[in-house]
Length: 373
Image 1 (tube, helix red, strand yellow):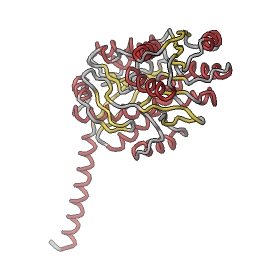
Image 2 (cartoon, rainbow, N blue to C red):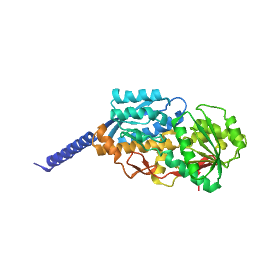
Image 3 (cartoon, one colour):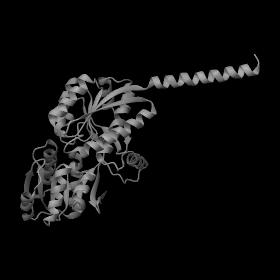
Image 4 (cartoon, rainbow, N blue to C red):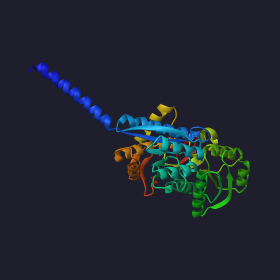
């Protein structure tokens, strides 16, 4: 065999090897259908937009790596329990998804969680922070920092910083999430020996809070603890400032959205919240995520986008550990997640599939979230 023929065989062999290797690598990718239930239309769609964008960015990055091939199937709940439940049933039974991400609200998870759990489908809440979510069952997870961890951190810092002795409380009484946040706030305030001057309630979609705020103002609190979703919360802040109520607000998780600043504008200044996410954190992983998100969607990511982004990466890592898209194997792999290093920082699931991580305490100042020191 002359050298030219020999060289030709070598080149052909190498070419064939590359094709086979590429085919094997492609075949090794684990295919998985994952359902997403989110608020895409109606009140609260700002949460849903951030969440779905976080999922989409993570999906594209993960699929490009080739270890898993994720197909996300999005369903709109509009923030309604019955619609969220119908979406879950469709995803579980018709679409045969291996797992579900969402829904957006704790109120929705109260009906969707039991359905997924009974069906043996792992479900991970990325924005559900009320008490008792993961206690629904062994297939129910969340990577969203529960208010039972977040609120004590923000309250304690605010009390120490401003020497707060007495507070007024305001909360939405018709939502599992806002009611749970209020319960946590009240417990922390009681444990710290704070005097509660008045407790006022409101309903989702309410537009006028002057009656509640007038009562609050008359009691002269050092601060107001408020558990609300961003739409109501931003209006409350705006109306309070116009009425001359300039004391600090400590807000629940529903306030952790740029939408609060967008709606309330300068009235949002002085709002204190605790969150696992801080977009200006001097961390390479955070900076890269912010740049990619902003390039893809034309805006900076908020807490809900970041939690969704990390959640899909956590799901992807568990899928790789499970070795295939099997609901039970995936559940067990998820339960074993420890020290995952995401854009939110170091994350683990505890024995009840709940969050182990440290929150940041932020304050809105000059129209932006900043570290509260």
